[in-house]
Image (cartoon, rainbow, N blue to C red; front, side, top):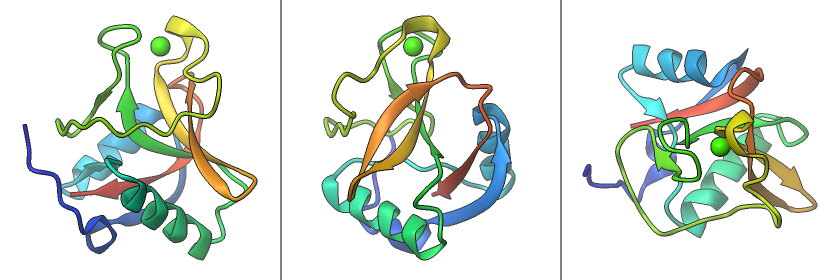
Amino acid sequence: MLQHSFNVLATLIYVEKWLTWADARAHCQGLGRDLVSIHSQQDQDQVGALIDSNGGSDTRHWIGLTDQATERTFVWADGTSGSFENWYPGEPGAGEARDCVFLHKTGLLYRWFDYPCTYHARFLCSV
Ligand SMILES: [Ca+2]
């Protein structure tokens, strides 16, 4: 497993494009990065702050979490792992049709939702 950087903000790139999860990941990889992983509330707060500062708080943003390989087993695309979870109550929801995870702000909080990978969303890349 890769070592997770706790200074996620220093490595984050906000991408103002609307792509599928796979295309978003490919875009990050083209920058030598991957879709962002979130392993703590601090990570989550920093990612949320970056979205807010880019005026994206009303939209959805892919993160690197997916259960495409094994249904109900969510893994981070960059190979990092951790126990932190930030699902919206009732998520993850709808099985094999929903294999990729985006952030969406509900009230003041960014939470995780699984959704079809073919949806087009903005996204964040990180090391
Ligand atoms: Ca799924």
